[in-house]
Amino acid sequence: MANISKFTPEKQAVILEALHNHPSLGRAARKARVTRQTLRNWRREHPEFGAACEAAREAGFDALEDALIERGEKNDTTAAIFMLKGWKPERYQERKAVDMNLTGNLTVLFPERSDGPQ
Image: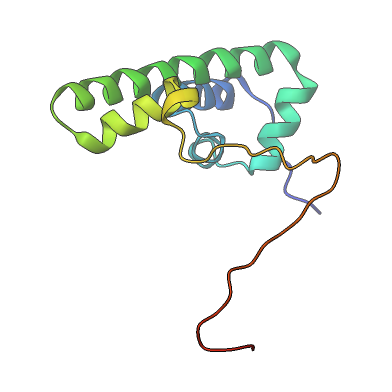
């Protein structure tokens, strides 16, 4: 017989507290001693619980964001770079998109090699 975890108020409280402290679904599931899939199922099957999970995760992300800002303000270069890339990707992202759609004829010129043909 399968080991079915029961959806209880106690498990809900453990999950919500875990998400509030650290917004990882995997960590919250482990704290409640359920699988990630069980947690996903509960969130889908119980919309109010799903909404509470999202609110708790948002609070957890806010706390992480606050901690990152504090680190960036204390001369933590890595934290500062991370913040800039996340908040101003148009200016600080590492890769730029290149549009390779061409119209008309394309001529590719290769420089001559000094060591002869290959």
